[in-house]
Length: 320
Length: 291
Image (tube, rainbow over all chains, first blue to last red; front, side):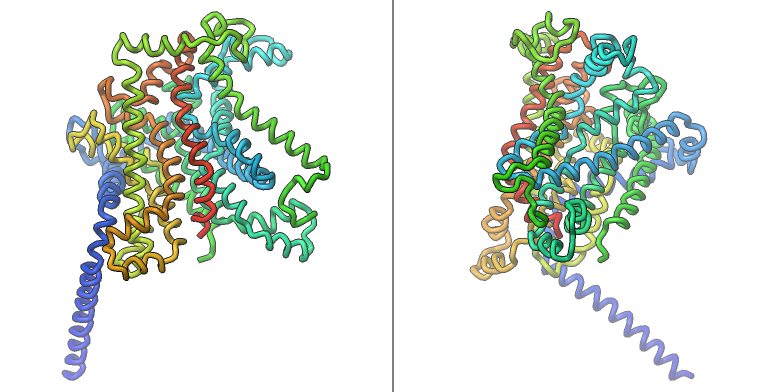
């Protein structure tokens, strides 16, 4: 009996010393890598200060009432209750954002991939021109280009689109594209599809150029007949990492649509028909200064993104 | 001709290929149309701007809009050139700073095999890659204002320096550089610091190109930071100034001046893209994103 207790305490002491031994080894390893940590320090300090701390603070603030002037006051789940139960505008914003993302996400993504695929097959000397055509819209800022779109979609007969449609006999009188609640979201979708050949497009282009030629030869021997089969059975699987990267970027950018809404439709848009989660966040944070409430909006947006990205990783992530 | 990846097969006339070229060119020109229209409006005299029926191309080009832009805003609050100066300072600092900081951080993460917490740090960065930077905007604003950095260049530059995307791309690229090269320098007695500057940095040149394109475009087009971290007129950057100038939606009155300002804003991004494009594609090809 006493023997077993002795044994047990012995074991406990052993594990304890093993644990502290491990810690000591870890500490020694860390000391040996002093220089490595010095290299990492600038990034980590700024990253912590401006990303990790803010994310954590956002979570905490979302449970408080905070107007910057007075110190934050703990109010539990009230902000979230208000958001999902009483804030009709927020519900509208969520619906708008999802509608927007469901259309621009897949369409923009597919367009980017197909265009990259076609471009990757033409001779290198012509590629630059087409890359420039399709990529330039993505690098222009929404603010700078809004001058053009505002004019194109202008609600009087001076607007280019109204002018053409009237001339073609589609409409009898000018349509208020940016004020009508029927077309606000449509305009946002058109403009952002125009701008959507971004970082994903470049990644696809580079990936497609690097698919080894022998894959296609092997495929031909195995009986692949058409270009579409080639695309589906060989090309797509070979560029999976780029597809994943592009999808993550697309999700992030579709869900945080903001500039386009503000620039084209104003803040707030007529009857909130072009209101998005990001404009709601901006409204409460930097116009009304209700930081706690805005933080709750941020948290909801964050969870939406993480959730969607999980799904994407499940579909496209490699099985490691 | 399966297995041949090019559409144009030799000199043979190919109807499908022709159709595809036609389609690509048409779509490409359609994509460029709004930009062409922007250039054309920036050069239009007032009489042509309000012409009915509306005209796409300019007939009598003039530089009056650019003159108006510099004069009109010059007498009112601060000269327009001040916004350009602010934007140039902020964007260049972000590009240079983030390349150096990201490369420095990527080096140990990629090449120091036994570094404790390596995986944890990298996973954290990957996680941060997945959400909008704007989500952190509110507390960032609080951090900046508590540190007393409002209305300084520091507030506009520093928060953008540690971008997860930069670190991710740098690390993926470094992973493909053979360790032997770095080992050799170490054996020759180089310290980590000299190894980094003499060997690692030069090899990372193609990655610089990619990062400078992305971070320049991000910084140059970003109205957020200036909107939130500045309150005075002379700290505004170009996109924010443009936003105020255009006066929100539905304003058509100063369309010529706004088009001129917008053009000034778009040109640098196109120039940077053209310059870095070659190297970018190279980086993407060898790097990365490919595992």
